[in-house]
Length: 151
Image (tube, rainbow, N blue to C red):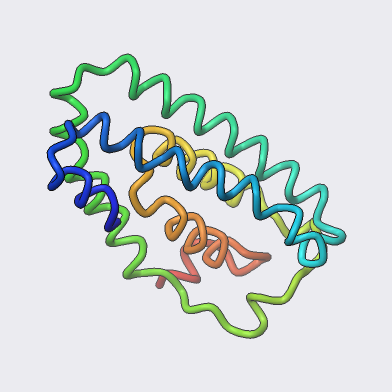
């Protein structure tokens, strides 16, 4: 949310700023996996389902980014950032219970579909996508469901 506007202020065109803003976090996310082995123990099935949804959504987002004219990107970005901001503001707060590792089976279809949508957003515009992913996972965790978590 901060680096994208900073890159725009530095004079980069919006699409170039977006791509620049996406590369480092992508490398960082891959690099952190080995250090998270303890937290990921017993989570292979959940990680696989969410990982596939992320890869597919990101691929669709990147294709959309590459196929849409720059003018469309510039017009859509304020709405995407505004939507992400509302999701961040409306997210459920993390508690000790929501942060504890659970069985991989508590990843619901809503989590997988939501993760695809957030990854599509992240593939198109990476700004705040990590925070939106955390908000989504907190909201769709277990049987609590998206609507009950937000309302």
